[in-house]
Length: 352
Image (cartoon, rainbow, N blue to C red; front, side, top):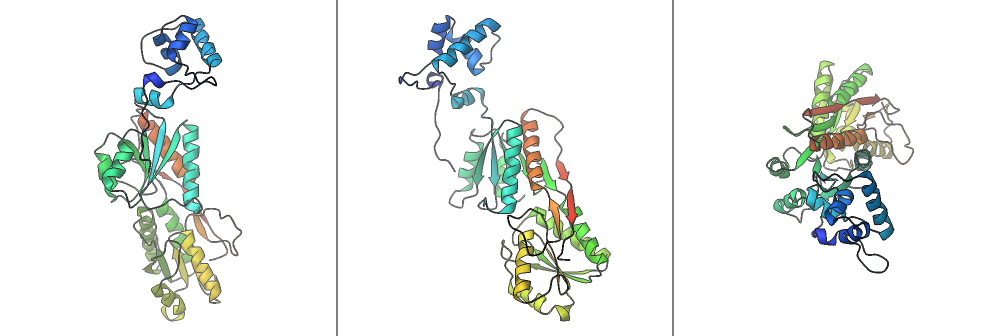
């Protein structure tokens, strides 16, 4: 995270001309024969009851263009107590631009900021920073509001609750905070119904390796719906975010004829693709020997050998909606919903 703050005042609100002369409000005022305050009202949006005629306004704007004046955005932000910058805090370590989920979230945030005419600043949960330092960076005035992707138990959440910084959550629900999510539960219900229709009776569920409210909703909803259809669920928590198999999972798959496991439901698509690779290496036919289902449905940069059965959750739209809610909050909108749930789509493929 950035460790330096550039300080600006009214005196340096200008730019250096090719002649190395700084054009100031006073220079423009002298050229137009008005007061520097009037120039500030027109060029920098100074708040006052001063009315400036259209003719004078045009003269000031023309003079500013001819003289090469540009306002200093940081100085204006310090004065107006707004930066037009929204922040993203990712509480699960590093954002990986090549990760399909991370890339889709960033795309949605950028689209949302562009639509709302805001800029985006990204903050990470680097371990070398203490919570006090992270909080000071976020709440120190560099941003107007924050989109938060973090566990409800992240220690930063309570710090933010006691601050003046507006923030919304996405992906994971944070109680008492406006949250935007995909309908994880509905997607998992559709997966359970699909496997029931195919006649599966015992399913291995590959759980998320870490704490995730979104992933937990998926698993709970699947088990509940599967039970209604007489399906037994064996949950195994993998330790690899990229989907690598642990020994307990390998034992279940290798002994599937004994334990009756005929399908594997994965908390996310990377986990499902890793399982498909393992099955291929072991000559396990998919879906004849083992059906495989994922979740997220993010388009891959390559053509997979088999089209994965999955649930499409449009995380770009979730992120874009989170930005819109944050901007509404900053604009003083009174009706900000506690929870916004965007629909998902079940996408049957060749792996089930």
